[in-house]
Image (cartoon, helix red, strand yellow):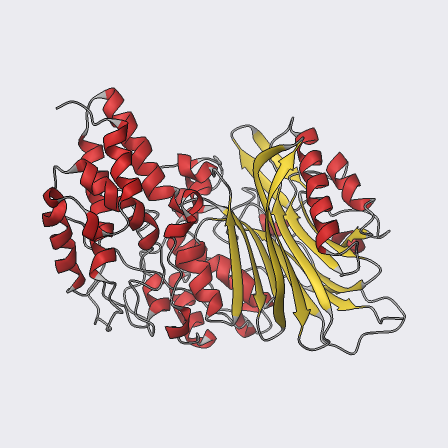
Length: 535
């Protein structure tokens, strides 16, 4: 059999809008998927049952009084379960037609979940829509009583099964040209639908998801992490200067590059980090535990590749409103078993802020559009009525790209100048700049007409020096210890009341980051801000 032509593979995917338009030859495949919709999509696991297999590592100790674990309100986890894969089919072109819809449809986090047991489900498995390639389903350790799932529509289930059909057929193609073509098509349909075809993204039906009980979910998280050492305690440093103090509650902002799962497992080559420490089933618990330990009002994340199946459904049930902007062509898509593109995410607590304006920015460098992005949102504080602009970004990585990063930074500053109406609106910029304090892009921000200052300089003895590191890792190329992450703020309109201290070298350990105790190669930065009194 000759390898299928590109037009045969791609053409139907562009023309098919739903399963009803599938060719006749593919209808048995769709019918099989419709039958799947009549079955329970997954078995929700009740509390305390069948946790994932523990990873090797030191046994998790009981928390002592005063540790952050003992009193930190936590919330966690939810995940869709896999749709039943379709039976084998020879209609490769027809299957590809449905795959374009399926990749994003399966990514909708609310589609395969019970509203009541979403969080328990995520402790056991992840969404297959943007992640799972052909292969056997994960083995369950023990059966558990099923909750009533909210079933997906037969149309979307048929599309999801068709996508898996084309993935299996592609994996069987032995000829070099054909297998390469199939692999590329499978990756684009199964991995990059979110960035290339945003119209296919189906938002979660968040109105039907009940709020999360942090205590209940904390117990689930502890059950997953029981073999790991407890979190290290990090304290806040009081940075309030003498002078008039705001009567309003401080605004807590968290900046964190959480490490994309696909990059951690497939590209970053952390030679001293055991693969077991990078397992998503446990690493996501550590990420969420870190976030919820500090309860930020505003959360800025980079390298997010589990937005739709983890962070959006979970944080929305905690009262956050989120925005996600993927990279136009994420390096995650080059990794097998990826979960789609990574990008930046910005969350804010709806009880504290109201969204006034939002802008998604694709950064340019020397008039050329780049692969890096930023989100900028203007928020209104419900308590004080004052507005605040918050931006999150992730600039180009690697040595040798200093001028490129500088150009990206200038473009971002120009955009923020317009959004803040010439610095009339106070501004906070969080990001992984991939640049040290000696680089030109850092100097651009420090000398900008937006009157920005770096919050973490205030932790130094002289108040003018950045921390010695915000990222510490060991790769095949050697040990890397750099300051790359920053929280910039309008120094005339805002004051830093406190900042979270960094992990010490002893706490990080000889194998550096990530590790069994810390889920990312970057440290989280957390600051409390208050508005300066208006004259």
